[in-house]
Length: 309
Ligand code: GLY
Image 1 (cartoon, rainbow, N blue to C red):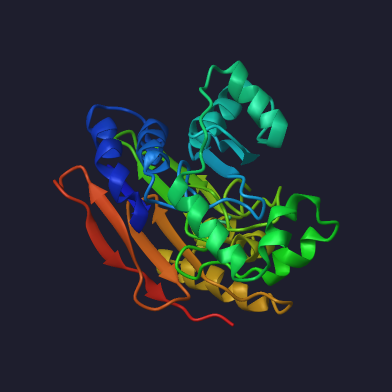
Image 2: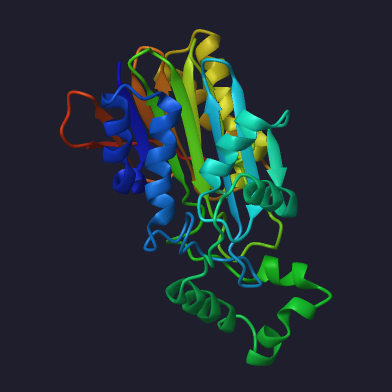
């Protein structure tokens, strides 16, 4: 079935992605096109341009893409100054004998691939960053923050904005050839420690796709999906014969095994090889989007609520 499933903030890109599929493009082409729209949206403070920065006010982006036909994948982590990490991730997959590049290496590769640099910190995001830090430290400490020998203490102290923390965009698509792909892009947790990489660029944690069974992607506090291998778990449970809902339930239940300071929001969306889809969250009243080629508008569907510790 020709279908796209996204996190709710995928709304700004889902039509562009469907256009690619309607024109006969691949699942990966559709995912990249859709996510690029989200990365461009300055009002989404969890992805790309306009994303909330790290503790030091630097926007660092993570992204990944996976091809369910071949299990090829590409990913980048902690990339600064490039607004479209999803496209860099795709180039990693296509041009390098590697899966994941981070930091300066990823930025060097982006330059080699001809991507344009851009200042990603918008004035709106900078103001919220300053307000959040000022609520926890003096102006003097804030001015000297980069020189603090114990920056790690502030990473533990500065609480992230509960409305914005751990969002991220997820796209899963199945094209007319039946191929499944998945893509994820994020600016990560707001006010994170510099260099912190979440689940989004880690294949198996925040993303997994395999044509034979399906795909899953995560949003939320990446530290949880990293430790539980959530996206790969969903696909593995499908391989083991669970229904799509059963596979999602098992993967959510696995998060309960994370007894050492886990906690936080975790959401997933999943698609099976027959085009069935589901969303889960440990928070109440959340939704995701889906759109088939026969639909003129995406539909919002409730995520199943699965409370975790
Ligand atoms: N889920 C996005 C992150 O934790 O960075």
